[in-house]
Amino acid sequence: MAAGFGGALTGGPLTALGAALSPLDGGGPRTDAVVARISAAIGLGVMADGTQLPSEIELATQLGVSTMTLREALAVLREQGLVETRRGRGGGSFVRASAEQLTNRSLARLQEYTVLDLRDLGDEYFAVAGAAAVLATRRAVAADVERLRGLAQRLAESTDPVHSRRSDSRFQIEVTVVSQSARLTRTEVGLQAELSEMRWLPTLAVDPKKIAAEHLELVAAIEAEDEAAARTLAEEHSAAAIRQLIGLRMEMTS
Image 1 (tube, rainbow, N blue to C red):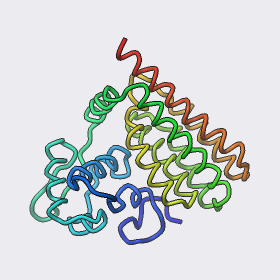
Image 2: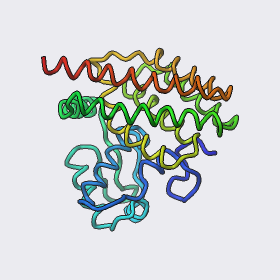
Image 3: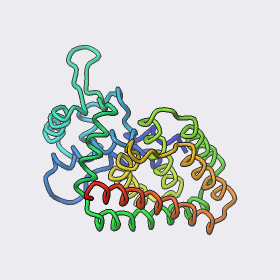
């Protein structure tokens, strides 16, 4: 399996980027849905700052929308400061997402949630994390384990908050990629898009080394094919994250 980000637009194996930019489902305003999907990919770091977006035709095809809808979405993203479009030779649309932008957006998002909203979101996160961890113990091959271990170690070495958040999100998405469940992976991408920026707000002072150590424990359980341990570790990690967010949300209203 590839490292998780290549081949997303070519119909190859399931990847994190492929899940983030999978075809839109259902009805509703298509432009808003495209904005949300690309914003999530940027926030998660699967489309990092400075990355050039695929051509309009490629991206529209990947998302299952018309090029007109995509152009409308890109215009919104430019207004939000998340995308910059350059004209001329070597031009195109490029990701622009500063740490300050992401922090401000995260605080605004957290204020939109009630405690009950966060608990409900946490229930889904808990269920998906546990199921993905169990399936990963059954389906991971040696290359998957090494990739997960490398992602956890990268988080342990991180000194930049934005890089830490993206490394953490990527690790958790990659666990679902290793589970080989397309549905779980798409759900996890959505969960991380909602949670990761809030989870790593500076106010919470999350320690990347502590989170990395938890991830390495999960990798060891996956490698040992220990389903019970993997499920427990993944569920405990998700529950702790939600408890922190609920605590912060309650402080904001007190």
